[in-house]
Structures are given as C-alpha cells and as structure tokens.
Length: 251
Image (cartoon, rainbow, N blue to C red; front, side, top):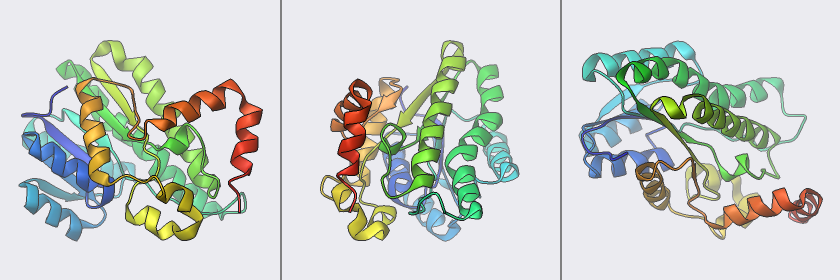
C-alpha cells in the first residue's frame, strides 16, 4: 500500500511514535491524516503542522472510537489506513491493582477490537483497507518489569494475527509494528529500570520509517529493531534457555 492520496487515522497521534507516523504519512502525500488523541491540545499542534485534522478521542471507550470513525468517514467517505497506535504502560507485578489491569487491557487490547468493529465492515464493502497496530517487541518477547504490558501486548499481537488470518484474503491487510526501545516519554519515564532498552533505543522517526516500508511491502510483522527477529527465534527454539536469560536481566 502506498500512502499518497490515502485517508489515514492515527490514534495516540499527538506524541511519540504516533506523532512521527502522522508526520511521515503527511510527508508521503496522504490526502488527510487524522491525529486522534486524548491530548487534544498536542493533537491540534501536530495537525496544524501537517495540515491534518485533530480529533479528541479516548480509545478505551468504544463509543468514542465509533464517533471518531463516523466523523472521518462522513467527511472523507472512507478510511484507507487505521493505525491503532495508542498504548500505555504500568510498571508492576501480579499485584497491580485491578483497575490498572483493566485500564491497560482496554487501551492496549480492546482499543484494537473497537477499531476493527468500527472500520472493518466499511473496508470490506469498499473492497479493502489497511490496519496498522502498534504492538511492541514485548508482544513477541516480554517486559520484565511490567506484567500488564507483557500480557496485553501478547494479546494485541494475537488479535492482529487473527485479523490477518480472517480478512487477509478479503482485501484487508494487517501489520503489527513491534519496536523494542523507542525514545519517547513512555521510555524516559521508566528511568534506570529500562536502561537495557535505552542502550539500543531508536528515535520515533526511525520507527515511522520502518512502518512506511512495512506497509508498502504489506508485511505483517514490522520490526524496526532487526535483532528482535533473532530474539524471537531463540525464544521459540529453546524456551527454557530464553527464560533463564531473561531472569538474568532482573535487578
């Protein structure tokens, strides 16, 4: 898929990877880039920069995702590429409060489900469309400091796989964007606990570049950090050895 003349929606588009995606899609000639975010002030700033459209939306609520999609389709006739990019991280263990588990589940998993419910029928009716889901290398590997992030990112990857299997031969393409460390506010807030990720961290613009290349190739798994593919092979090849290695990363 090429971005020129396409209508694109990016959730979590006001900052980090989402902002980089919005800028890159606009630079590649997208007809309209919709910057969807809870932070409407920052979303409006990005939209003004790229001549896009800012819409306030809480992706953890299905009614707001439906409202977002309905507005864009009403104004532009359809959505060619929907990027479910919004995500959150909570560093903690199995004792993380139920409310935080639920919040992570709704943003990191159900937001993808809500998006699919909202856009897939219209995409099928038009004969095609594209879903880009920002997952994380944690969906393939894990996150040693966050049970909620590891679990929900595994689930979001599983849903992306399911969508690709279900609709891939019916004109809907799906990509799972799985970066490792990225120099965003989320990573910076993690501090010293995430030093092992900071050492090889990429800039958001590098992730956006990988995403555009992956979309052009209609590639399911997009890995901005090429080494993640090797880590994933090692995990699959000898699970117990991989688990022992991950334990060594614990403080």
